[in-house]
Length: 300
Image (tube, rainbow, N blue to C red; front, side):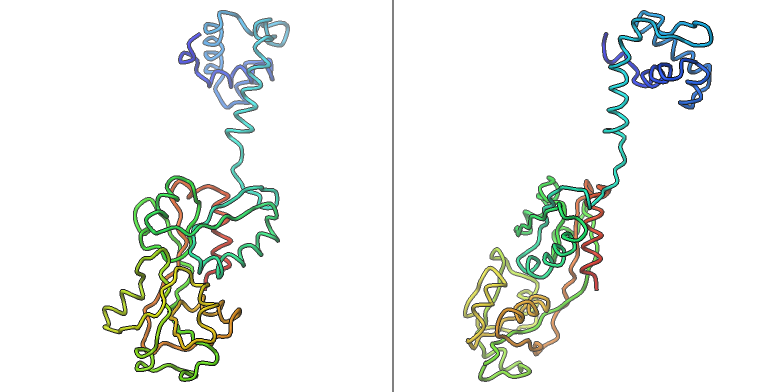
């Protein structure tokens, strides 16, 4: 038999006939009219070259051929119901899944810890894998399914096939050593331009702040350029360096190192932090749940 000649809807009728032993009751169970069900039974008989169901007394009894087919048909129907048409709801308390989240090191220290705390309470078997990728690789990772979510400032993802949700708006502040000899509660423009600076350029690329400072013709004497924000924990304390970083990372560094946070001597550009995902995961219930967790924890 050529599989293309088999209308899989006929298996629904076969299953109903096995269960109800009556064309009338089978038609009621599957929502077909009685003539349509009778026509489907006729097609089944022609397909298998067997009567399949024969009226004996008040019931349509299966023939030996139908009885032989029954276990396989029931197995197929159970598979379709339980695996293909199963409810796509996601139960975090029972799930054992690993999510890959793209975020720079600023995200790993500022965003990931509260997410892990929430998972420990609501989804103890769910795991997070955090990756920091160049912007041009982030889109490819989300498109391929190598990652389900990106959290941070990703202007390259603001395009078709990607969804985004705004989490919060932040900006830049300066950090200096707590014992800095010349800078106390504030930093002047003159001090800013005369100071030596520690600059963070993740994966070596120019960022929003660098472009903005160039446009405003505000120069910095860059003494050291590093790839990770958390390197400033060891670099800034005890030095006379100034580092300009997003406020959230400044607050994290201040919890772990002897630094002070001071306002920049100019009105800094705003940074909008979003979470991004590819359209292929838009209705994935597990990813929908994770996005809800991220939004609830990080929005402000």
